[in-house]
Length: 346
Figure 1 (cartoon, rainbow, N blue to C red):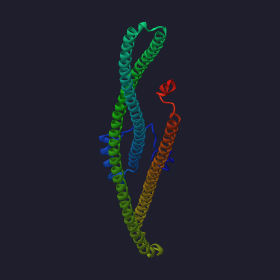
Figure 2: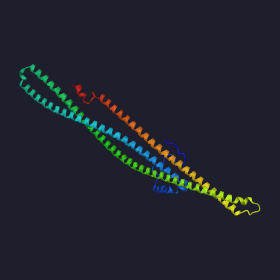
Figure 3: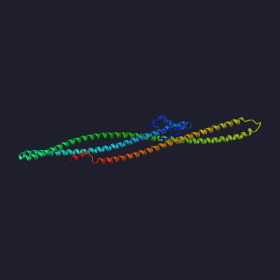
Figure 4: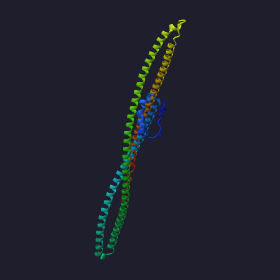
């Protein structure tokens, strides 16, 4: 995922601890900047800080992805609940209409039956033909009663279906509430991680400023050492010119004191030269570590931007596919409703 470190800073790893900076290590980090001039090994504390930043960003990104998935699931649940509510409303209207029609039909048939029975009693003596007519009417009445019984049975089926839909609606509402609670919890967690990420970024900026201050101090120290080295070289050259007449004359004293002073000056020059080289090496190491840290941060930011763009494209693709499947489902189920059974009976 990331390029390996060029120097001492470790590469980010998901197996690292999430919050490795305790209060003690935070104090140590704040004290490590001033003492970095004498102890180059203290620069390794920047690696832990960078690892915390990367892990916090990745975990925050994972939580944001989970939050988006739960939000999409919640929207799907809400659409299903809305469809179930609409179906429930249609079933209730149909049930009310069937009950009203059944009551009216039953009252009409009861009245017709009473009238037919009265008419049968009055016209019992009018002959066999009238009896056949009355028998036909009774047959029609029986057929009407049979249809009424079937409608009542159908009403019971609709009532059972309505109860089942209400149970599904209740379960869907419970799932929706649970998903809403989980989404709120994840949203709070993401907010906390964003706050911690901003704190880590502030600490990183402070560390970067401290590194810049250290580098500036090293530059000033190198300049001072160069000037001192130049002064020592001029003094050494002057001493050499002074002792040249004495060393070239025969029969004069050896002037061992001047020679020992010259040796001391030469040793001091070598020491200053070595110190200057060490300072330059340390400055180069600090610059390389700073460049590596900046490169890793740039890679992390580019990776996050690319992942966000890919997730945005995937969400757009999923939304377009969902709308297309929904429109196809509506077109396919246009003539296959639940109440097509009544149309077939008619």
